[in-house]
Length: 396
Length: 132
Image (cartoon, rainbow over all chains, first blue to last red; front, side, top):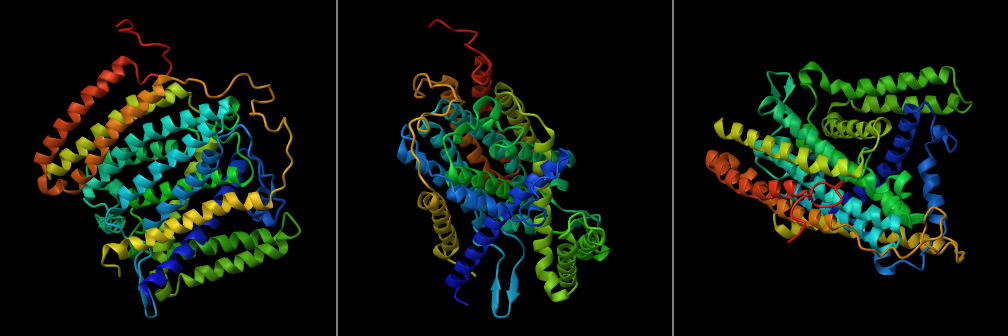
């Protein structure tokens, strides 16, 4: 098939999946957060609130589109545009799995396999700071200005430890292409420990790099405990105080999109990408089927004594679908194509869950603590860590 | 399989176009569908219900500029680290030594700004060298 046509189809598919995922990450966050706080979360719109994201989008689209007269119009509109744009681009270089062949078509499970994928992601996500800084300045509002200044200073400060933490696995694997990075994490140490980057090299150092990367990633995406830009008890909503309707939603989307990108990068750089957590000969290829059969069993169990009237009908349907997916993973031809995607998305979802878990658990930093933590703790540790790994690589 | 550079980067361009379309669509669609109702109070900057005093275009802390400049310095260092990491296995100890010298020189500056108090946001003013 024509390469150009194939690319356009793949890009459309990826964009569709990404936008749907964005909406449902939000649903997942509200649900998990609610259950951490002993609430039930959204449950009115659709079964278990599953149509809530859709309702939110409809609500936000039909809201009044206010452009206050005190703002700088050009930059006011440019800021959410830039935020969303730079959040959506990085997905182009992220590989989701190995090559697949469907009939005559043979293709990679990614849009572009750049030989400088890591640099590309760093460059584009670094541009995201413009959206935040511009929105804070253009709003001509004191809260927004403070939020924008805080946010841009915070994002550039945490970019340094993040860059150092990313350089550490590169020292061991010596490539900037995500596909090669993941390929060199294939196999198992001693037959059962996966050769993921965090288990390679000198024992604790790459795990330290992973932790530094995750902390910096939390700050880069403005998430609790580093969500100072939108500290609502000090700054109302920080840099997007003056934004409403879809322009506000644009910042929200950009934040969640950056979260997904960061989770993908963490998976690819440190957690072995699409490689399973234990060897196939010990049965790792049965894990997806087991998980879906378990999900089906839970659905049937709840359908037997439903908590809401509709559950008697919806849950068995979901259960049958889950059983069907479990069956698909048992078909050998399909399984070889789907297993990498399963492991990749499973790891990404686990990290996303940790994101939400942290939000439900930790309080917010104070601003001077936040900056001191980045510059006088995280940054030196990251540099020392990098040089220790370098020394180990040079001596072996 | 893509072999040339234009082919390699074509998907990226497609994604950029999609990103621009989505971003423009998001901002355009609510302008089209949302209703409008102007009122003078709605038009004032939001300050939690208080009448706004003065403009928001005030001077702000010089530390923000300092952090910006220090970031540029260290980010250049970080950019050098990537090609260094990629060829590291071929050069080994030589590369480590070279990079160590480079980073040590940058770190001298780092300790200077640290001791100067530029990294401490809770400080009102610099402790030393106020005259000059």
